[in-house]
Image 1 (cartoon, helix red, strand yellow):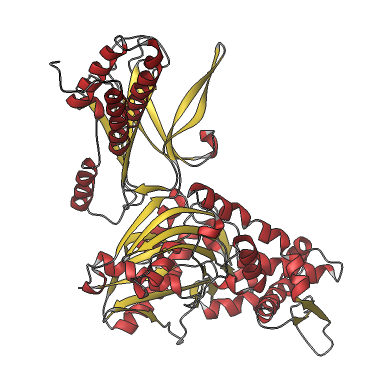
Image 2: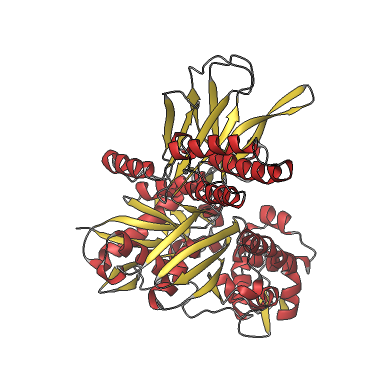
Length: 577
């Protein structure tokens, strides 16, 4: 059986690990290093080089190499190297292929399957692009795993008796993620996640590069066009200075000439930690958004967080540690190497997929990182405007999950409806990501506002089943959107969809619920006027819960209605309906 490896495909560096002999083990690359720079270069006309060799090329021939392309995943951007053009998916596949070959050399066996991690806030297109890159690299991607979740798996694997609330702060080279989770008795339950796809260590380096150039009255944007070799070498020197400032109070940066060369006469620019903190202040302020969003979504106060875990090499910067410590009033942990913890966790996830006995006591739940919903129209006086986004499954809902909402037709005797499915957080669909559509036909003739029920059922594989039907009608329309599930065979996909059916609950087809409603509506006419409002409120609550198709919510509302009836002296089921 081919090995199943875990891969941390990073903006700045990538690495992989495998689960062996009951432990996750990091895999060295061809030059004996654990970290492979996520840099791709083109040499000798058309030969691709990856990693350290490409990183060196970035200084001497910046026009023939590229980095940070992870930020462009899911976009139509084209990157030119020499005379050839590549997509972000192709560039990522080169890095993944290099990692796969390193793993095969280390394990001395074929490697055809992988778990690949992505930022928690990657959207559907970015996750699909990552899977495509894996396929181009010759890998079957068994799971796309959120990076903070992977980090938590590493901590959870090594401390299974813990009972605490963990906040994972993941600042990598190009992305920032925050995830709150509960850990108890070997179980990891993701509560909420948020992040930003364009904030990472590279941005802090860029601030330093721009600052150094300004001391010479040079604008970075101009220098990149007119002095690319100088900027490429300076970027390397500023990255080294940034690392120096993690352990020392000051760093010295030499300014290369226009050809990127250094000599004894090269000017030096001194930078202190305090100066760097001022340069990075606005970037640090951007950390507040995702941090606050996660705490609000989880209804959690900062003081309720037991431990803060740092992930990603950029968290080594003192300015980050100080900012997070002040914001949360809690000192972060870095028990494991921030650069390595995600790959280790991906290997643990691979072990869970493979049903390895070493992890048979571990359980993990995840959440839907983005809101899923449909396009709707709104009425403003006599004018009707479409293009609005109505959520059905909200972000940070624990998955797998099945939710239902009711909608109405726009016109009298409308016979068909196209359900446009979107993912995102904006109130307008044009600013969200369209995932697909479902056409509903044969709607019975009726007035505008005829009810149509739409149900979303979503699982950890990224399979979204969309179902629509008219209450009372025999036909249900459905489609299955599988952007994340390219790795699954037709048989596996059918089995996964079949499992989704167990999540569904149709309260309108529940005879006991319908009888309870009829009974309660009759009682409304019997109680005193002073009691009627309380009973009607309980009935409304149950009908509202039915509209969501959530069995737990329906059960809660049903129990509430039964309690109100009992207080009023009525017992449902005690009389002949």
